[in-house]
Amino acid sequence: MPFQIFLNMHMMWGLLLIFFVLALALPRQVWPVVLLRLFYLVMIVSGVGMLIALQFPLFYIVKGLLAFVLIGMIEMVLARRKKGAVSPVQWGVLLILLVLVPLMGYQVIYF
Image (cartoon, rainbow, N blue to C red; front, side):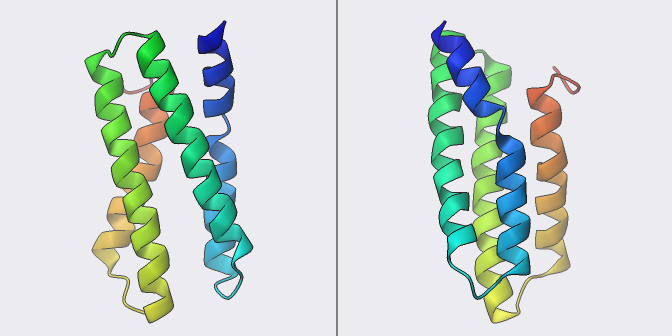
C-alpha cells in the first residue's frame, strides 16, 4: 500500500517538466521556480520512499543519483540563464538527463 502511494506521487514528474518550461519562459516570475522546487521535494520524498519499499536495488539507486544531477542541472541552467551564460554543453547534459531519467523510471532502459 505505501509503495503505491509513493509511486503515484512520483508519477507527477510531468508537472516538474511543465514548471521548468514555465520558469524558462517567465524568467522574471518567482512562482514557477517555487513550484518547481516544491516538486523537487515531492520527487525526492517519493523516490526515497520507493527505494525503502523496494529494499534499495542498485538500478534505482543509480536512477536516484542521476535524478539529483538532473535537479542540479535544472537549477544551474535557470541560474545561468538569468546571467546569460548557459553553455551548449549544459543544455546538452540537461536534455540527456531529461530523457534518460524517465526512461529508466519506466524501465525502457534497464541494466
